[in-house]
Amino acid sequence: MKLRHIHAFERDFDMTVERIGKKLKITIADGQKIITNTLIKDGDKINVNL
Image (tube, rainbow, N blue to C red; front, side):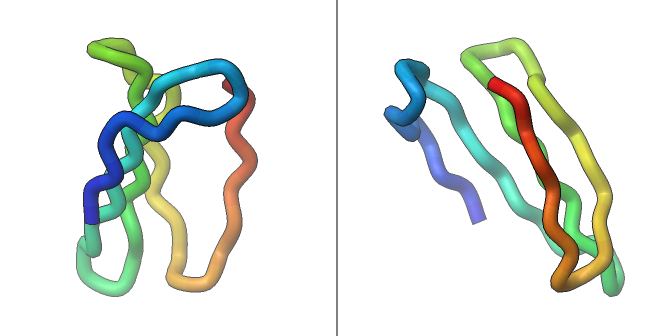
């Protein structure tokens, strides 16, 4: 799932969620700069500081 151009918190960023086996790979990018690239278990939560 890809969410492009999310306008929130005075920023414009993209969020990508991909399933890799039983885990989820979450990538949050601000333009070309990757803010976070995290692999989590299904149902887990992450905190992101923008």
